[in-house]
Length: 228
Image (tube, rainbow, N blue to C red; front, side):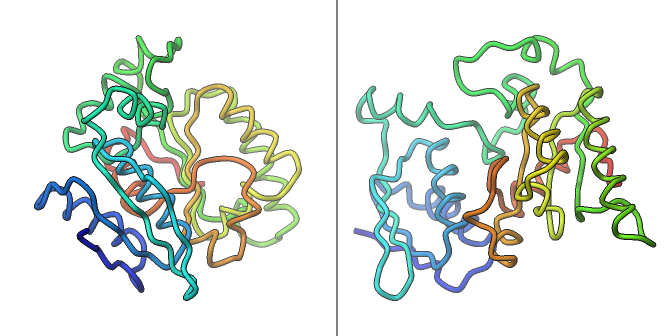
């Protein structure tokens, strides 16, 4: 079995190398080795939307993860399994996002689906859990109010990086607003590298753990980016 060693590589390099490996070699099955759990999640989402599936993940003694990956076109049942995963940004043809919004899963119908192409794709980029500078207590309150107000707007996606990932972890009104936004169809992306840096990977309560390739692609596809 072919092996792709991605140990020691920072986000989004493991996903990029996996994509390049598949595009160049089109292997039936292969093994990817990474040394952090965000890479496991990101690679799994990528392959499950590109004709492959992760058969199993083995954690080794040296704190690495071995992902056994295999093509799934061979059987319809396996193919259906990949379709249960939410669509991500890793499509070669980015025009697909105008046809099937990323916040919908395959087979789902939504009031957003028919009109998404006519709506502006507005992205909120949150790089901190406070709004403004000068007083942290006031900043936290302002952020609470900001998120509550977003539920009245037409938002496409929310991206959280750096200190902003704390909003996906801490109980309180900001988290309640984020959950309401998710229920409304807003896709919430939480930076995996940032969660890992703050030791919060297991504490995340909302959103999808994402990587820098996902983030940059989303910003590129957006019609408008708001960074409070």
